[in-house]
Every structure is written in C-alpha cells, then in structure tokens.
Length: 324
Image 1 (tube, rainbow, N blue to C red):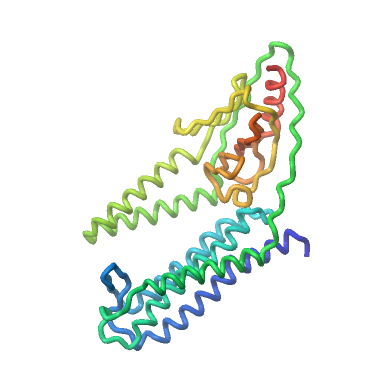
Image 2 (spheres, rainbow, N blue to C red):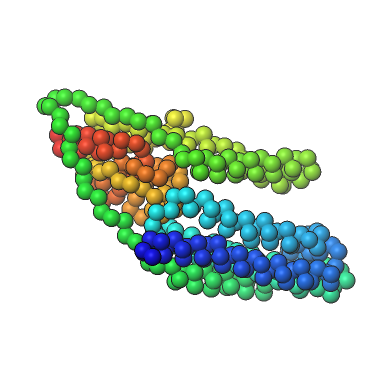
C-alpha cells in the first residue's frame, strides 16, 4: 500500500470510524436509561439550573443528528477532492472525532445524571459534564491527529515560460470559473436547512429562532451570490478576479508580481475547503479542484485562483512582468 492510500485509509478511520464507535456507545447508554428517566427531561441549562425540557427521546435524536450527521457531512464533502494527506485533511481528521466525542459525551452525561429522578428540575448543573466533555474531545482529537501521517509538502512548481510577445504587442486573457458541484450542493443544503429553520420559527411563534435563522439564510444567500462564480482577467494591468455579482474584486498589479505558474490545487488539502480561502502565506479564490493560476508576489505571498487554461494565463503574466 503506497503512502497516499495509507493516509486515505487512516483519514477514513479517524474521521468516520472513530465517530461511529463513539455514537454507538453513546446511543447504547442512552437507550438503556430511557425507562428510568423523568418525562419530560431537561435538555437545556441556564445559570439557575434546568430551564428547557423535552421528550426523553430528545437526547437520542440529538445524538443521531449531531453525533452522526456532523462527521458524515464534514468527511463526506471532503472525500471527493481527496488527493493527498495535506495539513487541512489531517486537521479535519482530528477535528471531526473531537467534536463528535465532546457532543456525545455531554449529551449522554446529562441524560444519565437524570436517571431515577422524579422531576427533571432536580437535575444537577452541567458545569462538570461540560468540562470533562471538552477534555474528552481534546484527548480524542489529539490521538487522531497523531494516528495520521505527517502532512505531505506541496511539490514546488516552476514558473511558466513567458508567452512570446512582440515589442508593443498587447494581449488579454480571460476566463470564467465557478464553484464545483459538491460545494454548490453543500451551499444549497445549508441554505435550505436555514430557510426551513426560519419558517419553523415563524410558524411556531419563536421569534429568537426565527430571526436567527432568517439572518443566517440571508448571509448564506449573500455568500452564494457573491462567491460562486468569478471572471478572471490577465492584461497589462496585472491579474484581476471579480465576482459575477461585481463584488468582491481582487487585483494584483504587475509591479507586485515576481512570477506566475500553473499549479494543481486540492481545495480541502491545501485550503481547508472551497470559496475565498486564506492560509498562511496564500490567499485563494478556490472554487474547484484541478488547474489553477498562482501568482507569487514580490513580498513572498501567493494569490491563487482555480481556473481552466491556467498555463496560458501564467505564460502571459510572465511575459508582461518581464516586459515591465
């Protein structure tokens, strides 16, 4: 088994296997205590103790939706673009089981401590369960981080050969690039879920939930409108990438460009996902995996935009930079 296949296997083990085991153990404990729980049970605590109540099955439902749903969503959406064990994948492989462990531990602990009570209002505080849940999550996350191999370094690319340009000749290159289908589906699902939550909040006369989910829906729609497609242009002024909505707009002048190159980008491995992404030393308009234009600034920082025909764009930038 080669290094890449081994890294992928370990990522699946910690990102999906560990959360699955944690969820199964949590559900087994919760189901075993259901007969001894008060009805309703406490599902929310304030400064003065329990202040929110629900069905004894609420914890089981939350465990399934959050404990199983979060790993499936986070790991599932990252696998289509998996190419190597980049630093973002290693972090994701540690974060998913850590979050799952923390949630399942807290949910299970708060249910177990209500077993045998006649009234859920008698339940103790959640300060200690919360502390130990966080510690358990951190411990599991640390182990899952160590289990995975060290992140591979991204291979260095060589600057493209300049495009032949006659003295005084002008040239322009432009393309459009859009978000990949997995990322679009993820955004669509998030907008749909937030919109459904807003509708439920308004119908059930829950203004706090309604306004929160409405605001979230508006933010997600704004993000979808401004960050799903960009027009990329290379000309005598440098490199420009502008959203089809007109905002945001990014421009790298020729005077700030040291050289340019065509690279291959893995969104999750290198940037932690899709969209407008920042990692130390690099900023990217990362809408899909595959070819990308990378501009190396004279300051040492890099600007990356995923776009087809990146080789021609890099060659033109090389020629324009050399001429200036």
